[in-house]
Image (cartoon, rainbow, N blue to C red; front, side, top):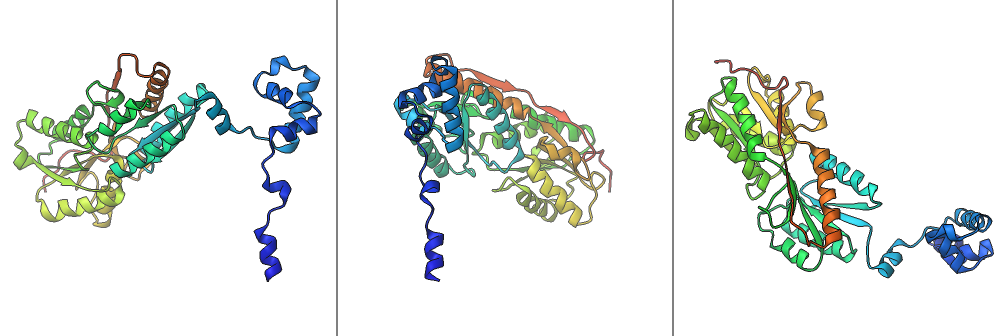
Length: 354
């Protein structure tokens, strides 16, 4: 047994040691300077010599040490993004937009999920700054952005993602007040007069704004909030949270015929809970989600939702961050605000008196 443990614990020297530029030079029969030129200024090297070096690189599996290059140059090709929950398909699509835009400028994305925790945000920001990132894109978990002001004072470029602070930082977001208004107004137009709103913590700007929009639509229709709106707050903006919220709505609030959900994941949980209870959608309960993520259109009962241009949000945010990093904040901060769109599908239907 000891011999087996020993052989497993060891790695052959040839596999353990990372091949360096000197190894490439030795195999190709050239100087270290020539290898460096092939890597950084290939036009200065004769074609035959360049081919020898490239063959040696391929043979050895050489990968240049990017972190060392960054230290020498004082820059990084990495950009960080801290989002609320990467498991949410909304942020997955936003991240794709960021990544594609960064790739056009030969940058790489480092993605972190805060799980709506300010402590995690601070920890990830520190780690990203230690990596020397060009800047960070942040979808904040709370309204207090002092920690980002401090990061900017340290020279870190910052762009708010799916959020706005009123103009002191660059930001990209969606008019969520309008989105909440569209969702509730749609249900009101279908004859629903007692509506539940499944929301997340209002310390999150998106949740607070969507709540404002829902309440605005009810007031505009001449409905009293006390008689027409049932609000349920969940701590987890996912399907499990949505299903728990449905239990509260059905067990504690009489007369609700429609539900607006703060995002499509909570709407998925609401739909799941309704199905378990044998209630039909939209005949027994109309449901509207928010985000219009990819699965919304392919559910057994396709989900009516408020569409956000997720990919475009990511691209626009990356654009602003690259500009911010170049100018080091010495420019007028830009706020990009996209407009939401109501996408009507089968989950919302007219009120049917019981």
